[in-house]
Length: 200
Image (tube, rainbow, N blue to C red; front, side):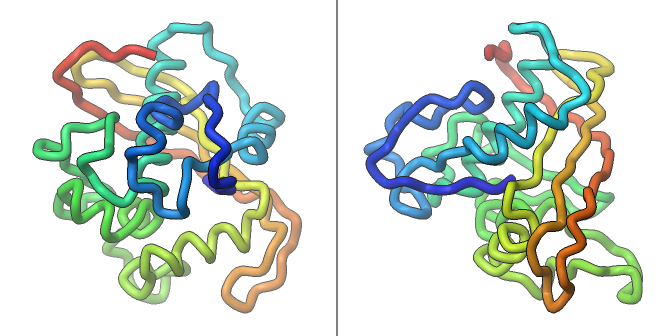
């Protein structure tokens, strides 16, 4: 998901919590809370579901968006409000679980795109990217952002399984490849477990 940062401008975001909570004491990666107006517009124009306010689906969707915002824009796990940093583990594509600190160090794209595919099938090589280079590659390729939505929630809480959709338009260069303007879209499944009531 792409965003811009306007230092000093702090506003709420209808899809992400904790953008304005303690905004002046949180250590932000780019000097202040991000602004998600551009990717929010892409999300609203392209989503396939509009969940009822307060529903489990909307709550899960906004919780994941809030977590991704923290992972991409906060520099200290102690500033995270969406997870318990001491208990957090991220498992992706059968890889070994990452702690909160490891996930933050790698960055969202590198942590979420780690895989054990043979080299000839790896078009994105997380092990060769830094936090900064990974975000720059996606900001360049998807200038309007890479929107995310919950398609279905299968159960929970406390363990919640969900299907998601991620999409954007390849409108900028990516590692020597010219933009096509085509939509890039994929679906996936995730689970999350919490130890306290989820609230929107």
